[in-house]
Image (tube, rainbow, N blue to C red; front, side, top):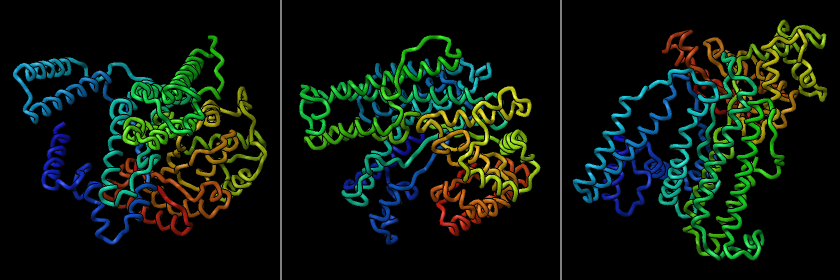
Length: 524
């Protein structure tokens, strides 16, 4: 709160000194309000800056350790304390406070602080993976859902002020993207099974649908206007309140989406022992595009009927949130150690009678993986591993994970991260296992180079991969690489590891440029 108060004070001082400025994001050298004028002064054109701003994207990945996740009850209390402090600041700044009002706020603060002091800071029972994921994504529901569209509104005002009216932030721009490891990170955690990831994906869909529904209901309560565009009129017919007709249909479909996801979740938990309502997939929202098209239609109608200011309020904020969070709130990254994939392919090759994959050298592995990627023939049929002694429990778990990936709907999952990646075959193996499992749109495969040796060999590994037509044709000119600091620091010490990470990123950038690949770094 103190930081927010200082920032607000700086922004107020800047606005008073520069009354002609919008002052949405201030003028600090490291803020958007300060950087945009600097870029213009450096010789860049408004269009160049606009194109860069609207095409780049920062992905923020939520990760958590069970001991690092705050209890929800404490988060709620701290949030109430912050709201009370903000209210007190506003009353003082307006000079509108009285002794009674001040006493009410002080008493409320004392109550919250007393409860915090007397509350257990730690959960005394180990959370399940599902509980960890729910607590970890609480920040989206309580903070980001409101903060993200507010920031985009400020960014839009700053862009228009600095670059010109024609360079406002596009409706569907999503400079920020969010994802999570909670529920998908199974590296070293046997509790993260295929069903656990299924559960977390469904829970995320339920929470996203509820957040969107709440906003749609808010809009429905406001849009009582009887005028609309011909485009909207064609969709709703001769209704007196056209917006509410369409919004009512959206709310009903969101209700059905929540009911479907809840049924699927309960079915996973009880083995589908209870009966369920027959809900068809075309009756619910599975892709954000369909929902976005309907909300954009409302926004267009408001804009062309003289209600652009209304469309630029709650409707615009909802469009921004759907673009940023979609219908899954935070898609999950799946993470697993490279040796697990080697073990799975070894079991498959021995089952097929063609040798032991784990004993082949790197050249043989790459050759075989490339031939299988080009082949239409499946390596193994679904669940063929059940009851087969050649497939250990860990191999079955790995194969079931890829089967789970194939079942997921749009945007449920994000990327497949390979821990302890050491070679090109590690990456090809994951790509093959996805395709063999029937994944229609394979998750992008992200090698994580962690140890000092892995960092030193990362450039050669990626150079080999980019030289393989079978792989280059699958990545659409884009590649993400994770650079790990934890294991490398243990290997070589913090200073040596930091230098190795820097050198590795420089070399990888050169390799990507050589092969005309757009490279994204994920620092871990």
